[in-house]
Image (cartoon, rainbow, N blue to C red; front, side, top):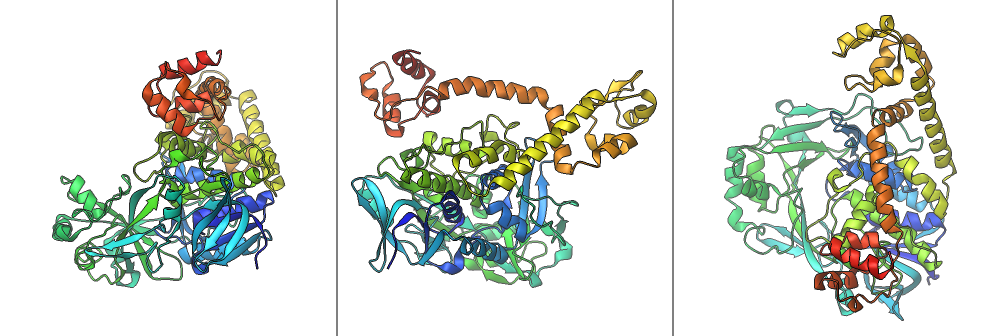
Length: 621
């Protein structure tokens, strides 16, 4: 009935979709197995992509040939570049998406790929032979063979949904939980745990008083996520902001005795940085109000996502409290918020390629590894899909360093440190933020993707080359062209910057903290004429390269020093027990995680600089 596949991907959320595309774009024949074809790429929680650090990840996925950025550009209804008041290392793109269009576009792109087949059924087990993944077993007893398996089960592994004192099995509202895989993996020797996440109520936008809320529009000149020529966003839809109050908090507190969060029924740890409304009230008792973002689910629906009001309280308490929020006085609820508990597998059981240590050619990606968020899931799926293809061809795994991508930071953190709560990416987790900007992901990563054999990269590489040449030309012009006092002093006075007394290179003027390239272009007609041949993206890149040149060089020097340790490889079967000079904790952690290099070993929790010195001495370094 089935051919033998190269790669089977289990689960069709954001991680599974990117895993399937990645392996297929490498040339593998892929089967994407899902319990429901109608929920492929479902935005289970908020209808948005990107945000702080998450936007950088989406850009990186796009630069590596993934589809999340392309789908987002085709289906977004609002775009904002966050943190523009800060330095460029912090700038983060975010898009409000049309939830139904997003899933539809993903499915259309997957179905258009000749290397991807589909199967709609629950996968209940993995076929394992001689310590290697050989396919999957389904709920009706079918055995489908493959050379590699990627598990991207999201919140479906033994998922339990909580609403007040009610609880029932499910991986998402209205969908069944997945059974069998956890139990088999534990039998095979894997360690598992439980995590919790949640979602807010959905409400009827027709019942809201929009005039009573603060409007939050998109950027005047909306950007894109993909580096390809995707459609420009037109007719943006606004979001709105409102607030809870003391009265709202008192109503919510009245339901705490029925909350699964407080009465012990929920045992899994929830996301620290995206707490439920009851958790916020409990942890921040001194706060009189909390912000709520009122976000449309799409252009052609009245359904509204109440961001900031995630809850597992009884539905009657949620409804009563919502009606006391400004603008929500007559609200109608589509469905209440809920919490969901699910199985995950501590990611210290993985290699940096996301292949498991215990079973060869078995890969884990997404929330099964303890992460939260569409973007974190998508990038793991992409890396797992690429490495599944490489593994079956016995090629070296594709591993991104911390200095190369936020994706590298995320996976390195997971594998070396593990996580006891849902892991979310922040810019603060990266040491080299000025190198890992959202504007240069294509320059950093597209040539790497092209080098490992990702298909259809020629257009991207051409765009990267053109972008680099344009930025270089702008920099050369700014360094060689001078401006006189009569041309620039009026502008400098206006900006509160010191006047010049003789001709000065434009580059020197630009380096002043009060000056930006846009302002210079408006002040100097000859510069405006010169810059008309370059688009805004190239101008921004050139400006960042010039203004932050010292910081960029400093981080590059730090990277070079760290890379020396990354080049000292450790044999996979290295016996740490023979080194009695290592601390007992270091031996335990090193034997469990099996680092590939001294650099990776140095980032494992519990491995001290003294332990690294012992390893280096033993290796003659």
